[in-house]
Amino acid sequence: MTEPEEDFATLFEASQKTKRFERGQTIEGAVVAIGADVAFINVGGKGEATIALDELRDDDGALEVAVGDRVQAVVVSTAGGLVLSRKLARGAATSRQLEDAFHAGLPVEGRVEKAVKGGFEVRIARQRAFCPMSQIDLQRVTDPAVHEGRVYTFRITEFKEGGKDLVVSRRALLEEEQRTRAAEVRQSIVPGAVLTGRVASVRDFGAFVDLGAGVQGLIHVSEMGWSRVSDTSQVVTPGEEVVVKVLRVEEDGQKIALGLKQLTADPWSTVSGKYEIGHVRMGRVTRLAEFGAFIEIEPGIEGLAHASTFPPTGGARGWTRSVAVGSAVTVEIVSIDPEKKRIGVALVQEGSARAGGVDEVREYAEREAAEPAPSFGSLADKLRGALTPREK
Image 1 (cartoon, rainbow, N blue to C red):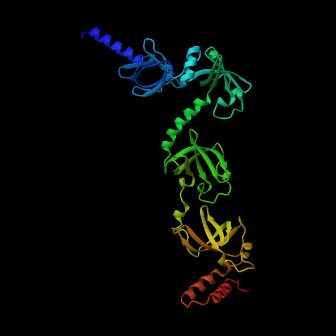
Image 2 (image 1 turned 120 degrees about the vertical axis):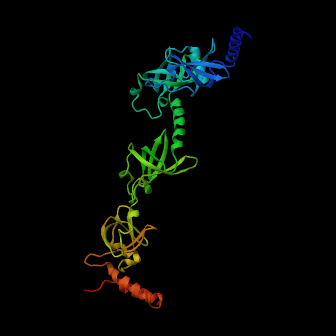
Image 3 (image 1 turned 180 degrees about the vertical axis):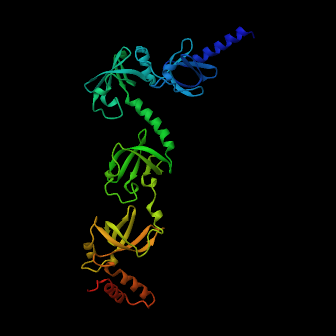
């Protein structure tokens, strides 16, 4: 076969491949070369298509693709070769192309002319279109004027009367972009990862943090600080940028647990050697329970003053009258278990070196350990006597 025949055969094969595609059809191919004005796309076999470089640039004019990258576009012409487009530039689209874009879902560029009742008037090529207020952005529009004069990319959602009645949506495209970016963001969300996000909302039980592309995680109130948090709004505020640690990812990535305190040192890691039995410390009452009072000795370190260490008073919970949540108290450390993160304390009453006879209780417990166990009533009577303040 001669060279001209080979050229003819090649052209014939290419023309046959071109016939396999139709205008408005969405196809995908790989970038094989980048010229001065167009990029060449391999759409299968020896078939190639072209796409204008202007459609492959970002807002700053930089190319978004390189040789080897795959792109998806819509066929806008089959005459003399395949011509692809990722969007129809404003002012360059005919009514037929707009109709093709409508059927193919191809994005089109338009300029927001002005705000009108219920939405915006948008100019696309030589056509006027209407964009409902709810379809101009992902967020609720509070000031329509900010969109006037802006050039956006839209999707045609309604095409009537030969293009004279057009309804478009920018939100539809933004949501698609968000879903694509959300999939990429979720790939980086794994337990142990440290990420930067922005506080979306603050609730009593915690705060929701936007990690990007609408993907949100929850910082539970218990993960906000080593100290007990009573008011989440005092820790984070909506719109604030925060650095968080991913604790858990559940339900196929739909439920993401985040933490703030994990990025600071655990105060319990320094308890050993810092606290000893018999040490007297100042603290603050954080909460009362049936079995005693919790005392914060330092941020993140709470001790329990068991109800049995309080002087006997009238009623089952009479001891609660001697303490109040938020009050400052002096306590003595009576037990330490760093592994279980537990510290037992007893209150030191004002005007007494030891609270309610803590020394007597400890001496009594040591003495009783070496003696036969008395009856419950006898032991209770002795313990109550040991806890009764001595008369001066």
